[in-house]
Image 1 (tube, rainbow, N blue to C red):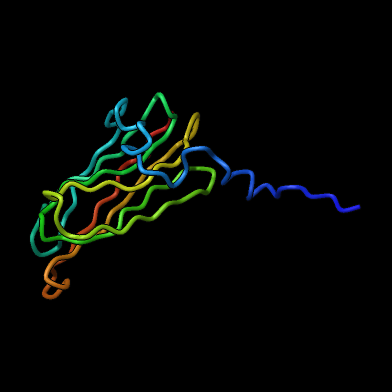
Image 2: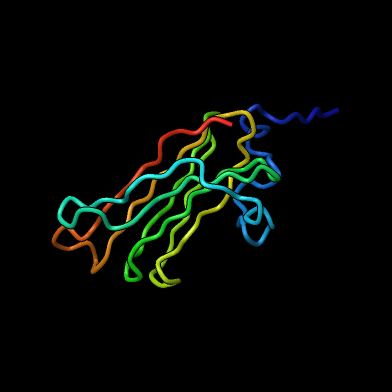
Length: 135
């Protein structure tokens, strides 16, 4: 007889909305901004904003960014229990982009983004990180 049991790491990753689009899932309709920060470039100064979003209905967090339409980048969201999601975005969409969700009820979450334009040459890149928010 074989006994199958999930490991603690597997149990942590088995959340219903993890790695899903907040707007396709309907969680985005009940969202609010809980933390925000500037996206800055060492050469160009402020190049956008990063927001940590919270859906009370779905008990999830995700990251949204607003930046230049020619920028590409990677959005990260993290939870205190060690889960992480990374989402790569391309230029366009009027500079508004969001990553996938992570379930974060009764725990801290935060996020970061790195962006670049024109291939990142000559310092054409930037980054931002939100403070932690605990729900």
